[in-house]
Image (cartoon, rainbow, N blue to C red; front, side, top):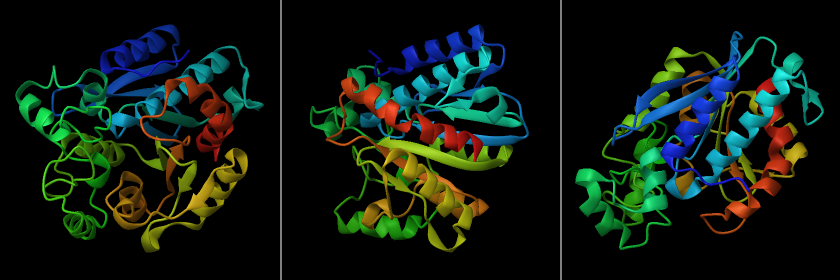
Length: 295
């Protein structure tokens, strides 16, 4: 059965894939607060690049598992000129480069997996903020929610946080002292400045929902792509509300580049979703992920 990754396990798996397949490389695009590399799997070297990201939140490690399952299947099919969801991969990915960043928040994921034991100088604050329950920790080790930390309506979001009595570091929903204050956020911004992505998608949990819209710069192509992904997966198209409506990575990408960006909320239930359900989730979303690669 697929597993939920600790950062060290994920790193080992990613380098194993790059050693096995000549068309795969691993690159560090930045570091977390605790110095863990933010690693991307790069598949192919075409001119048009697509970015898929997961595990922004510590309690959503299953999204990293999902992306690694897809990467493995994709690599195997590329190597033997095979198919994924009845799509011939080698032909579909011609002139494309797929960049997968499966774990945006390795410090937060490790907090959920092992508690505060390896949090260094942040151990005391993590213990205090979590009140002994690490399973629902979403933030990075400084108590900043990375997907609230992007410069897209951040001031509006900051006001909404304060209305909900969130004024500082928290296990979830605190957007930081200023936009893009966190190294994990800065790494994603820098990556997008270096690579001309045609679109991006982030995987979260839960709800079986696709978010595709942000502000006045949402391109018409984003709506068309979202409709195709919805038809493929059965996931509903919705617009986020309240504190989910600003500060996210896809919001920032759409606003800055006027290109499609998506947030895909996998599965249904209560976070953290059980690993036992990931194969069913993958089966339902495999075609959607292929669509993200080729549209």
